[in-house]
Image 1: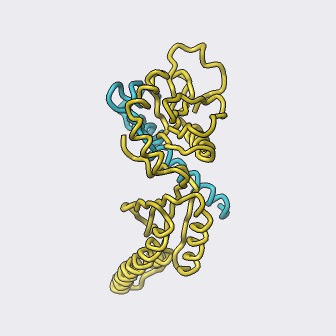
Image 2: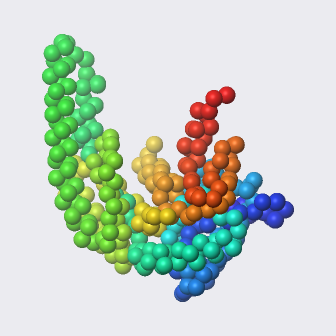
Image 3: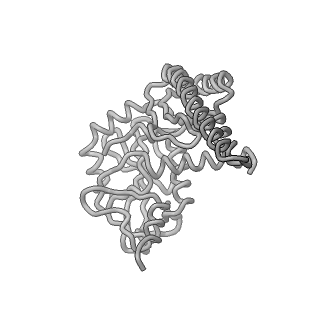
Length: 235
Length: 63
């Protein structure tokens, strides 16, 4: 988001806040970003002029990659893309006023990764396409097929629910926290984010792989490790 | 689209979903305007819209 060129020739400067880190162990070395320190925590910021800020897809992706680098070296509370404060003094004030909240959050996510898991039901998707591809000789035949599709769609959903309940239970045992996404649609039957200890990363991934083997009719999409985006909610 | 491309696209979408919609929101006091639309509002809360939503909003504005 921050351009590398000289930004000091512009009039209105703002601080872009990338995240808040535990700053007790090591120093930040990701120029042009720098820390605004308060006690043992710090906000990682970059300075830019308002007119030169970028808000396109590429900037958002680069922002995400920067957070991944930070997450590798620090315990991190990631800030949402587009978090700006007026100046370093304001950043310091925010850290001072919310120190206890940030400290508690940092403790919660310390040495932990976020993993996202989405599960798709291939069966559901395939069956719903059948009636669209055929030619029908009568309306009755068409309606019967539609009814059959509907019934199999419901049954597939019920089967998937049973399976995902088991899967979720297994993965919860390996995670410290989980957040289920209640709004799933299409052929996605399950979506959840897990907060997993770094030392259990391989175990968690192997477990997902093993579960995929147990449920070949479902398609698993595991992403991560991410910084703990979903586990730092609250203003 | 081959499987690797698809997988990379999914990862990018997951990344964008996270950086635009998740993460902590800090109370701010700066107004940023992009394409004449205020992205952040002064004083009380720092409100962030996704780029796509913002661009869509701009398109939907009456001429």
